[in-house]
Length: 166
Image (cartoon, rainbow, N blue to C red; front, top):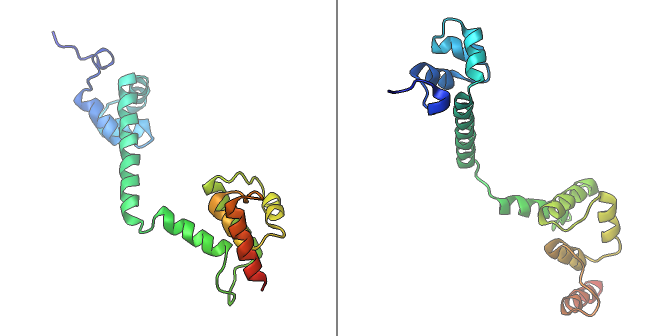
């Protein structure tokens, strides 16, 4: 004998499906839209049903996923574009219209967070970059640390520093 108990069977009736379809955060309004004669008491009963709650959760998940998919199609830039722009702000190549120091600092902080270089505050980043050359700052931005003395990479940075000073 077929059962109509949605809790044990996990199957929703046509009215319950209409309730889930109409649900947008207001259970009473959804019950009214679905055609329940007493929307308030029906809404309370329906919302205590785990099968209904599961169906609403699945509906929400599907809605969020579809929204993300649609938004992703509308966006015409990628992570690399964002990182490149932040790099441009942190290290302006054109002296004509350089961004302000706070803008550069914010961009460097954001890059540090994205690239996980373990800089925890603006003061720490400012302290780390004090007295460093452009080559050293670029190495830090690329790798998240400064080269150690005696490293082959450090010698290349020092050569760049010597060339820059001439």
